[in-house]
Image 1 (cartoon, each protein chain N blue to C red):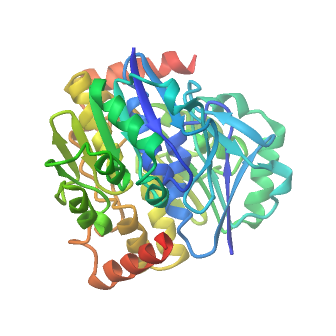
Image 2 (cartoon, each protein chain N blue to C red):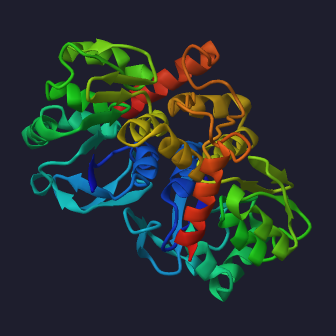
Length: 212
Length: 212
């Protein structure tokens, strides 16, 4: 069995969690644990989606894979001792310790990214340096068993990269085909290098406002 | 306000719903309605994720956008009068009636795809013809206000195409950048045309077994 603990909390970005969940739940004998400070409903960003957390942090002590999704709610946890202790403790025995989007800020706050190259949502990238990590604008960054992915949708790519390492290239390809992940976005604006400058500025301002 | 009704039910594939949700919730003044036969928890495919449905079908009568995700649970609803009536009725006044993956089988069973080109998960594509639709292996198919997307992850692409039409290209690009959707899958195996033949066969067999 492969136990996959996904940390959830209020103001999470749902796709950060559900993208890699959809990949990793297809690993052979995957057991998904939706872990939170308290079991119960968890609401996304602005409350438009409710996921259920099923396990209390302290009840999931040795997951094989730790996954920390991002969202505006990360800021409220950056000094949360229970969450940071759980991350540090799980990381001691995990096979992979991973994040999507601003989830990496929590790994960083727990000291797990010190001296490592790491990524997060492009608009928050520089914040990683505050915790001693080396920000890098790659989509998926492997540093030993620590894996960070860029914003929101990057968790799907990370999930497939993990599936290949946990199983095989054929397994990852089967999962990719199962979720028909043959992306064809109608625009090529998915990174600040590719989007029109006015779009980058507008999104940066909107995210800052939403964070505050 | 743009009211977006997402139909949920047991054995749904979570990413079918959460992918386009993550795009469409970013439309200006988007109101998401998680609609089910009865409000309450809804469990994904094999029960590894729980989403909350918040509204009863009959309480959401005139959504602007109807979104029907897929999953193994669609088969159990193909003759469900309440669900099919709700789809037909919502479709009368909707601006867009949409599906992801096998969600299109429910639109088809409701008679909404008759004579239209439509898509679904590649492994189920031929079933659309049973309901008088014309199966087409494209990723996102627009037929007037009826829009169908291919398997699971295709809902993200569909969401962005809808955002462009509901708002503007700049809005869709801003959403794409917000979710950093700059896909970089580690393999090129996301369609049966691209995946190795042995992978296609293995996935087809696994899906048939899971459906049964």
